[in-house]
Image (cartoon, rainbow, N blue to C red; front, side):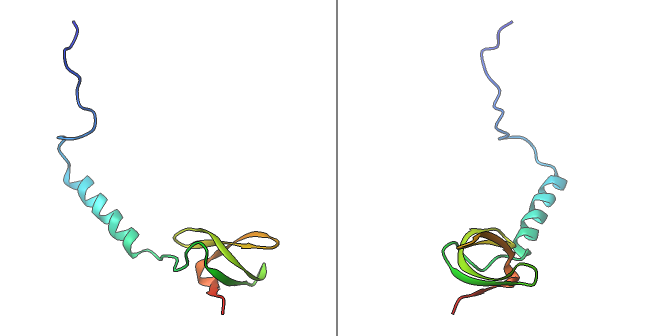
Length: 87
């Protein structure tokens, strides 16, 4: 037998459980309170790491907790707490 309609699979109209709703809200709250990187792509910074040394360059990659600094020697990735704006 051929159906004359197609079910909507987009999830609209489905009941939402209380547990999944609370998990979604908890995830959003955790992301909002997580540490964020204050630097943006294009900022000139100085990164001082005890293992790879001091590097000056431009931020080319940014994540919530780390930055990629492009220097003449390549791109180095640092924790955002080790990076300071270039004066």
